[in-house]
Image (cartoon, rainbow over all chains, first blue to last red):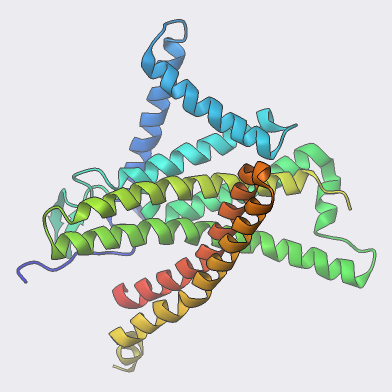
Amino acid sequence: MATALHISISAEPIFRFGQFEFTNSMLVSLLVSLFLSLVAIWFYNHRQAKSNLKLFIQTIVESFYEFVQSVSPHHASQFFPLIATIFFFVMFGSWAGLLPGMETIGFQADHGFVPLFRGATADLNITLGLAIFAVVSVQVFGYKNLGPKYFKKFFNFTNPINFFVGFLELLSEFARVMSFAFRLFGNIFAGEVLLAVIAFLVPVIASLPFIGLELFVGLIQALVFATLTLVFTNIAISDHH
Amino acid sequence: MAAEAVKSSSDVIVGATIAFGGLAPAIAIGLIVSKALEAIGRNPEAAAKVQTVMILGVAFAEAIAIYSLVVALILKFV
């Protein structure tokens, strides 16, 4: 074969200042955040006007709010901003990896080809950051709604069995961080590898069904991440031991 | 070098990792969805609730397959 398949499990740094490496997936995640912020600002500036695009955005956001309400009826307004942000960021971050030009436009460095763009959630650093953020937010919501009694769930000194159970709960919070991070990273990165391999084997048309599959997977993984965060938040605030 | 001999994994190992790692999650997802279908068949009105919980359960089960896929990818590409 003339060229080799270029797959790198870690995101390549585009430039460094000192020890800090700015990677290509960081660039795409900044662009996705910028895009979402611009849509929100546009929506706010035109809130009096009538427009089909506004209706479309309103339909999506309202149906997602009803979904959040169906899972937690009494606290939906408290949880919705966080859950919706997670959902939209993960969805558009995963879909960003499917745009033409991702992973192909880049520059030649001394150790090989460095692509300039890479899907935001195809980088373990970003998914790990999101996972830590989600699990810490669950603890914050638990503390906000239950007060310091929330931490009694983990440090329960009434009897040895409860102490062990509390310790296991603490351990399972850390397991959730890893589970969130690897679920999202694995799905999106495996999708990128699949697309690269298919495009490498059959350069025309064969990629189309797999791009469709990746659109679906991005949506489902965003939904799963947001729903799991919502469910864990629900469990955290409804502790009736 | 000894370190390199340990690091390089044969393609058979990589294939076996994902093959065995995907076995149990596939069975688990089949069981989850079959129970969900049974529940919907018994009580069609609760279909939306059952569906939501089913998707959650499938995501948990699929995560295990993804873990083994990530290990296989790391073995192959790192």
